[in-house]
Length: 124
Image 1: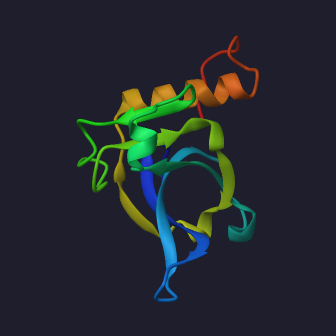
Image 2 (image 1 turned 180 degrees about the vertical axis):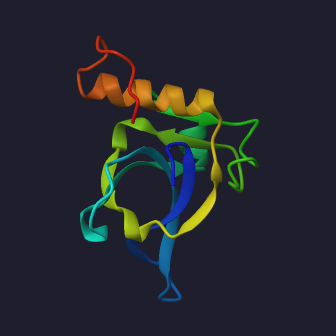
């Protein structure tokens, strides 16, 4: 698992059939490894919502032409301002990956969010 990978993640929502919904997330950074229960991965959610695609906002990164390379079903948006830490062991189904440009843009948004835009580039 490396930054730039796209995984399917169970967000705890259940659909009409009672199955847990899985949504795509972008791995932004992978922390140091240790006991599996302590390993945390920084991820950003990905959406293909038409409303979001028609209204890309500050903090969003569009995946349009290369969405198939990411194994996404349609053009999508990475929600860079909605990053969260998740247990690594919950990321079990890798879908694909994003381009270096998309990952760089998301990491830049995260740095700005953390107030670290004047710091050296992230190497996570």
